[in-house]
Length: 396
Image 1 (cartoon, rainbow, N blue to C red):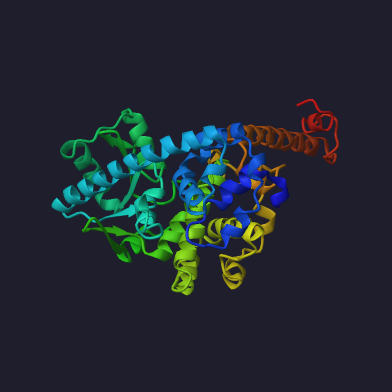
Image 2: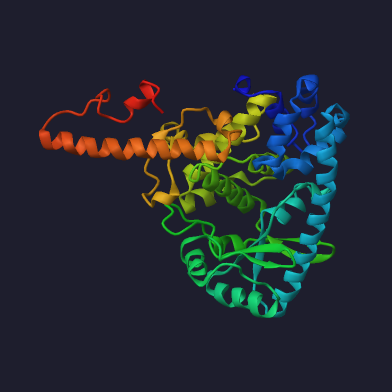
C-alpha cells in the first residue's frame, strides 16, 4: 500500500504519531533530500493543515526539523507560533463557556479538540490543533442554551434564519456562532437527520468524564464514547461526504495507544452494538488500523475487536461511493477507482468530481435499465449507448 504514496505522504503519516517511539526507525528511512518543497507546502496549506503542530513536534523530537526544505521550515515556524496563540485563545473561551453555562446549571460536554488535547496529548495539549469548539448539550435544553449564547454571552450567528432552521433540523449541530474570532458548534446530536444511524447522546452525557483545564473542571466523553464519536466523525466526512482528511487518523491511533493498557473494549463493543453503528465504526477502525499496520507493522486495534464488529458485507461496502446529500439511505452509486491511501491524499475537488461522474453513470444506467425492461430486453454493461462507455474510449 505504501508504494502508492511518496516520501512526503509517508512523512506526514509517520509524523502524526505522538508517544509511540516505534515510529523513529521508520522516520529515519525517509529520503529527506528527495522531499519536494512545493508538494509539502501545498499539502500543509490544504486539508492537512490541521496536523501541522503535531508534525513540528515530531520533527523536533527526532532531530529532523533541519532536514526539511528551507521554505517548509520557515512556514512551519511561523504557523507553529500562530497555532499556539490560537490554541490559547480557544482555551480561554472554553473556560468562559464553562463558567457562563454553569451559572444556568445546564450540562454540556466538550467534544473532540480540547478533550483529545488534554487527555491524549496532555503533556503538550497545544499540538492538537482544532478550528472551533464543539460542545454537546441535551436535546431538550438545546434551544434555551443556544438562545443564552446569543443573548447573554456575546455570541453572534452570521447565518440567516432559514439556514439556522436547516442546521437545527437537519444537521447534528446548530448554526455556528462566534465571539471574538472563536467559533462554537453546539451539537444536540452526533448524527444527522435521515442518517441511517443514531448514536445515544444521553448515554454519552451520563457517562462523561471530568478533566481539569487550568484547575477548571470540564466534562468530556469517556474514552470509549470518545472513540465512538471520533470514528463516526471520520466516517461521516470521509465515507459519506468524500472529504478525506488526515487529522482523524492520528486522533484515533494516539487515543488507542494512550489507553492501550486500560481501554474497555467490551464496553465499547456493547455500546456500538446497542447503537447499531457497526459499519461506521468498523470502517474507521479498519482504515486506521490498516494504514498504520502498513507503515509500522503493528495492529493498533485488536484483531478480535475487528472480528467481532465486522459486518458480513463490509468488504463489499468499504470502497463504495455514497453521498449523504442524496438522502437515499447511503445507497451505493459506484466504487472508487483509487485506493484508500491514494484517496486520503487527493484533493476534495478531485474526489467530488469522481463522485459526481459516478452519480451521472448510476442515474443514467438506472433509466436505461428501465427502458430495456419496457422493451423486454436485457441491459448489457457494454452497450454503446451507456455513458459509462465514455470512459472506455477516453472521452471524459
